[in-house]
Image (cartoon, rainbow, N blue to C red; front, side, top):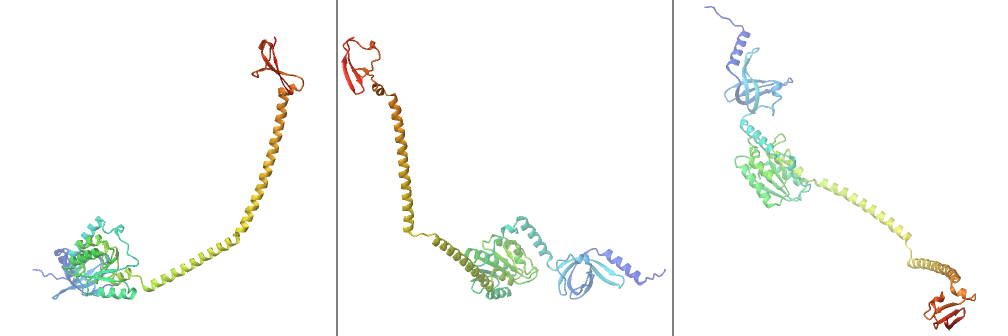
Length: 393
């Protein structure tokens, strides 16, 4: 029987083929240690548990897709292929993807709920209520013993110490937290004393923040009549409560700053408004002063006004008398002309020339002999009188 001799590289390559063929992509969970990220962008680290460890490599293309930055001490779950690095004979995992250990189920539930509520429109900007610029009363929903409430109270005391505050104490972690937060929201809306609410807690893992990712709380925030600012966790933490709320702050302290004006800012704004008001009042006074001066220049004494009206009345009277006299002269002349014309055609003018007018007793003018019979009483009009006669014809 012939003896087979391998070189080191042949043995490593054969082992690599065996490992890669025997193990398809598998899931491995452990704690990150010896983490290194060189300029190439690849990731090199070890996964360990209390009894063993294994080297891991994740190439830059896959590493760039990670939603978080791995670090020593972090518990993760990786999807990887078992392999061997032939040059050194190191047994290792080639990591394709990773997520924080224990977060897999929660993250899937988180993504599913985000998709559902997005399709329902709960995150739309049109539903966001405006945050009051100068709130009259602030409600805070958080743990009374956590760091978040201390940070918020410190900021409020520094920025606007006179504003009243109501604390609605709740748990912010664990299975009982979400129902308590929902009850606190309901109570704040029933009381109606706060015109803005801060929903807040400090940082933590996805599991720690999970009460703020549940559907019942999301709908309670959406239905709140009081605008809500969230300040949950750290700047990189995003919960479903943040998406539904009317405003998201990256931290509890930032939420307190967003909801309150700073005293110095208010004083500066008041000073600006005061300056503008004084300027506008001075402009108004100058305008009114100019108007009074103009009125004084054009204002006349009542005696002077009466004299002016009297003079005008006299002038009108003279014009009226002159017009009436002229009208009378013209009418008199017209009348004389009419009399002369009438006199020219009057039968009386004919009488002046020796003619007479014969008429019956009823003043009917006799124009023909056939109109008279014997014994008729007639009258003859001369220029200076009337003669009564009797017909004999």
